Length: 323
Image 1 (cartoon, one colour):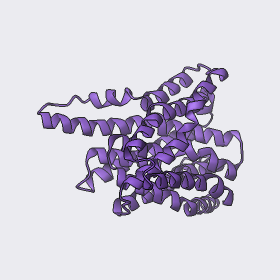
Image 2 (tube, helix red, strand yellow):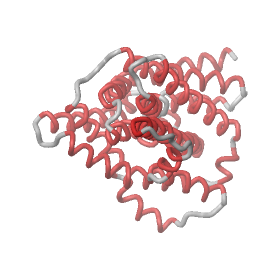
Image 3 (cartoon, one colour):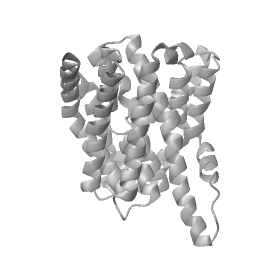
Image 4 (tube, helix red, strand yellow):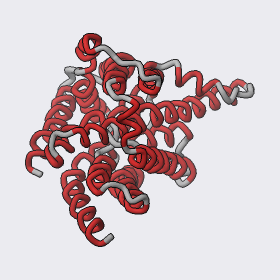
């Protein structure tokens, strides 16, 4: 556990703190964070998502169909549950606020922390890579496009209502798919399903910008945090509860009901217990929607994950012995 804290959690805190201090000292401001986010959202993150997914293969996805189905169902059920809870249980929230909440609290940060957390616990083996790849495909190739569609539907609907026009149902979807962060992972999945092998020599051209993804996203989140008032309210607390408790609990229950391989269950539970996706904060800041509460919920979840990670490993072990 100490290895996870030192090699996965502490670097996030340090980089985010560096961005926070830079913002407080006036070295960077909210406008600068938006520019950083633009680089992440349009270049670094799409490149990272594309390369990580396209290196998978059809055999990997079919090797454990139960894992693929359970991951898809659990994550997207939680994703949509977060959306509807924040949309209809908090009167002041708009559809855009709810969509950003889903992108944050309904998605684990598998791309940033997947290997960093799972490998120290379960070792460096193909099973870890399989879980990271499948969960990554669900989060990035399904969750992000759905979230962006919901976000654009709300924003476009508001603009159409103000102009007295009826909004096309397909416009938000098309708008979402025009963005690299949405179509890049979908294109990668299509290539994988078609069985087209991605050449090894092509990856370095994407890796150079992709490697800036995590560090720039976390640094930018720190700047954003310095420019907004930290809000630890019921929405921020609920986001952490849904992410760190509800999602891994559903993954554990579904894994037991579907009689999944015990090792896969443990890895999936830990993957679902990871802190919220940083991509959600980047999207929030880019659209200037739900930034303060979303960033606060993310920060709180990162801190709480230090305790929840070993707790879920223990709970899963007890459940596997009992059932």
